[in-house]
Image (cartoon, rainbow, N blue to C red; front, top):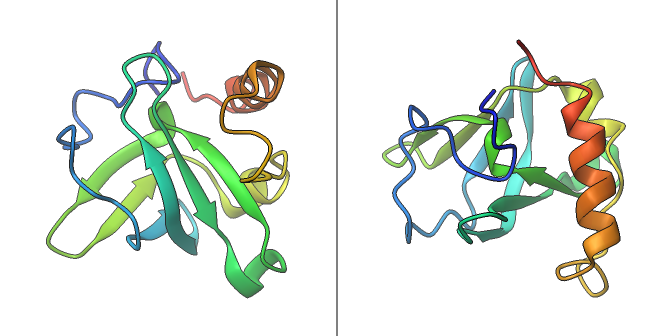
Length: 117
């Protein structure tokens, strides 16, 4: 993953301004849900994924640095995490957390522990 967890990897193929809402999200070991929300902020880019019935409708925030590839044609986002790693992530409360600095920090710490080197 990139050194900047909150920025897209240069090789991911994401163009700023591309609407990713509704794109399917693929972990390294299978599908995990769809993009419900995303941000392209320079130092705070992320995806919010609705995992649907897979983990009972949980929403999780994935820092943009976890995205390995965006396939606009197939409307899929590939992330460099397993389903289990995503399942263990802090739950995202879309009404309370978008601007919450503490949630942003703790989420970054969680995914930072799962970075591949």
